Image (cartoon, rainbow, N blue to C red; front, side, top):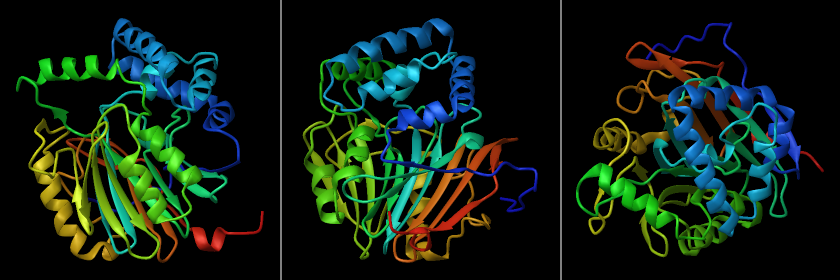
Length: 340
């Protein structure tokens, strides 16, 4: 892709939340929250979004998540519609690779505007500070980096086979989720960043904690550790890194419908990149090509735990593919560390 970056592109903000919850980020940036829910309203008919929201609100009322009140607070912001449904949306498509203390991920979603609204958030927790690459109004964690500890990326798992017919299997999956009370995977990842003090503690929580539905989790450690964890509600398949994962099962025992654009192609491309993840650059994106880069791409993150470098780029559709929608964000989190 063209790696040129017009100077008019917006800058990704770095917000220091301290120990505050992610509802505080939404209160600080309400216009971004309203913009994102407005974009979702354009993608989904109003009655569909309202139905998703009602069902999600009812499910969260029975759920074990400690972050329910934060989603309620986002929903209470004037002009925000559908916050509960969008927070529990499971249609993200992603590609991630991890090797030698480095994690690289792209994230795809059909909502326009996500690429330009990305925010990097510095958060304090009992286990130490960490950086969350997110959007105002989203309460879980999709991509994060904890200096000296680990970096994690979440990918949506395939829809599991029940009948072999995608629409029917999707409905069956939704019905099953409605009966579960365990944490959503993105809420578990947030809890891991807040409580796990090293790679091994994080890995154990990600592998063993019951979750409400499936998820694909990539984790890199500060000392070169790497793993991909395929999760079902009470089960886990672990693949020692280096490795790559798009939106399909790597294990041969589970069957599912892959998500996103050309998941097998993204897996093959990403596996090739794992041979030398350190050559990938967050400012010169010449290496990023189809199918990892496609018209639904909204985010690129490179987190290097050994050097402390964090790179983020927002992406938006441009013709049949995607192009930078932000200036590249680059910081060294080791240089940023300071007494608190």
